[in-house]
Image 1 (cartoon, rainbow, N blue to C red):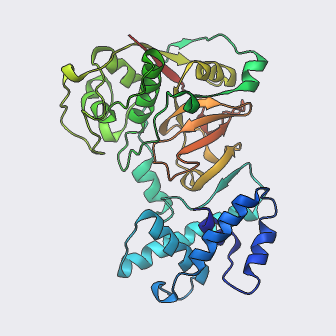
Image 2: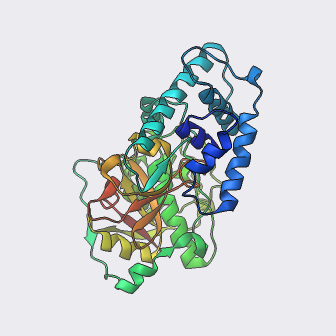
Image 3: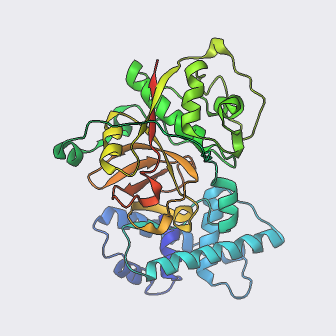
Amino acid sequence: MKQILIIAVLGLVASANFYEQLQSELKDIKSQHVLKELLGELKALIATPAKKVLKPSGIPHYVHVAFAGFKAKFNRVYEGTEHQYRLKIFYDNLKFIEEFYRGPKKSYTIGITAFADMTHEEFKEEYVGGLRVPANHERKVTILPELTKEQVAAGVDWRTKGIVNPVKNQEQCGSCWAFSAVAAMEGAYAQKTGTLKSFSEQQLVDCSKSFGNHGCQGGLMDFAFKYAETNKMEQESDYRYTARNGICSYKAAEGVFNTASYTDVAHNSPSQLQSASSLGVVSIAIEADKQVFQHYTGGVINSPDCGTHLDHGVAVVGFTSDSFIVRNSWGPSWGDRGYVQISNSASNICGVLSAPSFPKLA
């Protein structure tokens, strides 16, 4: 929540001049409507009864207030030693956030996400690392026609064109590759038929192992596209997501479409990824195991803070003149309503240019 981020960053507690201080700190916010909303939410948080807030020594009051708001938003229930343990982790994460804002101004923001009560190691172990690229994997690249400067400047956002479903949540299963591949296939299907449907990630998790994937232990989008060439994709309503490995229960009669092929886009080329993104939703790989991703809340990541060691599959759903719009699979409460914007710099920020690909339907 934005109000928790503000408390964390400023380290303020309710006082006679609290809101005056906050007004001063937020002077860069141009929208008075947004400012009024933030202030209202902050007042509600500060009003949390003190008796509901535990106060172990060494942890400031504002952290207890922020943790109470965090638990309420994300439905966390902690008791006894577990509460103390998670509160300490939460405090450590707030200190990381505070240090971020003490440094040079960035083009993106971080704050309280659903992962704020997890250590960085827990976050990496449970949500990152689902992308597995074999050492001998060869990409068969197709060079796409370049866009004009006018087309690049205009950009595209496929979310506004009816081919992108609401953000999904892979939960604690290394199935990011399946969510990335399905997002691209859902987009291609919607473009071809004019109907947006939700297709099954669990089908890929359970049934595409013979194509090189490993279920919740990781996989690759290209292998998912290859699987769909000979196995029609079922809808999510027919093959539900369970966030765990299961026995393949594919029913060919329920299948809706096959892929005909897939295209590997030239790597390390912003213009080629823009060209691909102008055609539809594109699967990409990034590095997402850094703390900036754990706590990202908005803006354009335009620095090497996230690295280029690929470990996570996501999907590009459009681009602006200076960034790619990326759909993650950690639910809508993470990032900017489930999305992150990554710079289109030739520096390959977060590895976004490293391995794009997209399917073609039969």
